[in-house]
Amino acid sequence: MTETTTHHHLPMFCDQCEQTAHGTGCSERGVCGKDPDVESLQKVLLYGLKGMAAYKAHARRLGKTDPEVEAFIEEALFATMTNVNPAVWHGPTGKIDARLLGDIARPLPSPVYYVTGPPGMVGAMRGVLEGLGVADDDVRSEEFFGY
Image: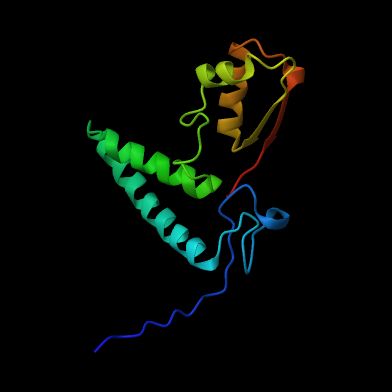
């Protein structure tokens, strides 16, 4: 005897990436093309990643690290939060630091930098840009709390 599985879709509300409709969230189908099943699976993945990150932080305090765990968390967050498939993305990935910013911006004639996020992150990125010799007039930033 075979069982038939019936999927009952929950209402979709996806606010996982930078492409969200009207800056709030997508319903029915994502602006990116994501369907409710993928959105639901990605929410489960994000929930699991929060737990992994908590254990990773605790292990680090105890002097233990695992490069495979760190790589998995980074890749899963990147794929979920940006909706970019790492198998087809050929651009840079990883921590945004002075080296990465310099490599990307060096060939540009007059780059303008946009930084948004929590105050600590915005301040740190402004410091990196200042260290690269970027003029304050070439940096636009916005700080926000409580996400």
